[in-house]
Image: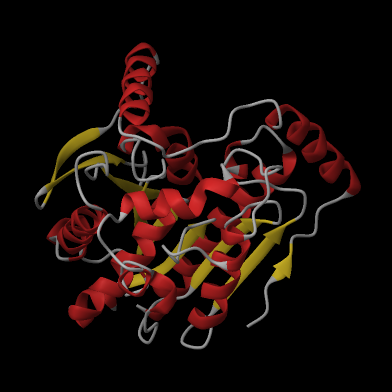
Length: 313
């Protein structure tokens, strides 16, 4: 399975280049200690307290808090959303804007996982939280007749892929997953070639420091242990996994993560992988036309798979 270069117009490319000039002035996201993530998390909470939040239901998805957004009309499907934030910041509410767009466009309910963060919990514990939420959703009578999709971004892409691989222990639950949408995830915790060769010009992420940051997240493990799936999903067995839609920017240090996992996943299932020209990590949040086009494509992909399943039923 080969990836495709996203068909951006010259105007869209020029707009992205202009935005990249602004990104170049911003500090790169780094994982160097436990203090900074806690500070950023506190600021996130303050900003969320000020901003008017949509109507949402907070409940326990098994042993894990989840945040549920629902469509106004009939629910056609359900999305398990796993937020990003480098494993050390973020929460389920952080994805409200993106999730509301999905709720409205696809008539789905979105269940966003409020997993523990790696400032206090090993990464394995984060995977356990996401797996528990997935098992709860897939086994719930409330969502029993609905197609289920797993969506993850960045660290959430890693946790989404890891969760799907871990679900192979429960084949009947895994069969209920109709698809996965993954944005620029981290799939090798030892660092893919594009991570290891990332230069100082990287945008948004601290490319040169990523390998050491990944080691900090997995203390006490050798590289061989870090490569074991589901901790590093790239090396997993993708037999039985659902179709997937993947995106990554060509300026993202994590470019190889998506391109390599798409190639391996594509042997077992239908995979679409798109390489976004002139795009850095986090591009779906940028106020540019290319980001809106990607989100529209993702929502259309989910809607199409919902219709296919409805026709089969």
